[in-house]
Image (tube, rainbow, N blue to C red):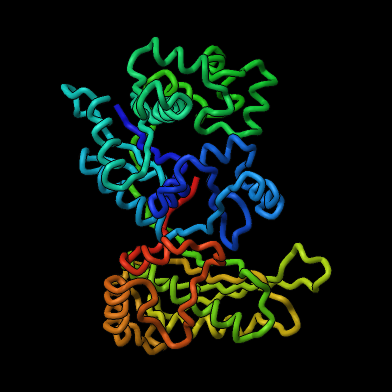
Length: 423
């Protein structure tokens, strides 16, 4: 059996840990630069505020219903996510972190344990220690865990946050209730195809011949059918090494001065190098890009990018900063209003397996002690407390709606940088 631990309205729940008075009130969290809604409380959903809603279009509704809106605080969300993960994984031997607010737990070895009661302990401990509400779905496959979790969220009062799909009767009832578009792995376009063939519920898909499923969905569809029947097809995934690291941001305001854009790009390069050192790898390729606001048709449009292959792999902030500066100078053009920029590093090698060019000087080892000292001090005292002189220390997210409670929280906690996939 698997269990899926899923945090409810995670970003909003994190905001409520800072300010308990937000409980029961409509709350939304906005994306970078406070552009779109990326998380909503149940009360906000009931007002008809959709996900990805542009904040400026809903200003009047926010004002009319006293909807509290907050800038995204990814450092806080990552911190809370790590705490939820630490609590959950302490109950099992194997687990898979699926996203910032979800993880699967392996429960196959708990033959003589009441799984529902066991998961209730997990749920209650997370609630008590972190004040984050979670829903837990238990089932023989990961796909059915998703179904069980959806049932918990639809009927919270009935199941007290935990539901188990452990019998054929329960599975059949759940699949006859679940819309085909809500099955894990079926998107909007595929759901439309299903509707055209008379498949409206998940149970309807199980009635189709395997040849029809293969024709529409390929081998992925056959695996999905088996998962929905309770036959395990998807095992827990081990974290895969990253193939690239990108730090890109849209600016709150368009930038017209070269040095302002340069400082942002240099800062992005520093963050890339920190992430490389965190996973003990070096990069051989660096890309820098800049672009204007494509939605401003009244302004001239420009975008450009340039890549450099390094003779010696590195994760030194100093060396990466020099390359980023060189690439930036090559692509920057005066007379434009820049809205977005970024740095991407890829082609990784392990830090202890670097192959050095015979014709180029290698200064990586000279910088390594300084870089490690800087990383250690930032880990202890907070992000960017120690930084290169070219960095301003300003946050790279455009956030205007930071609450006083969050500022107080930052003073008392050292938060790790967000480093998760979002689904």
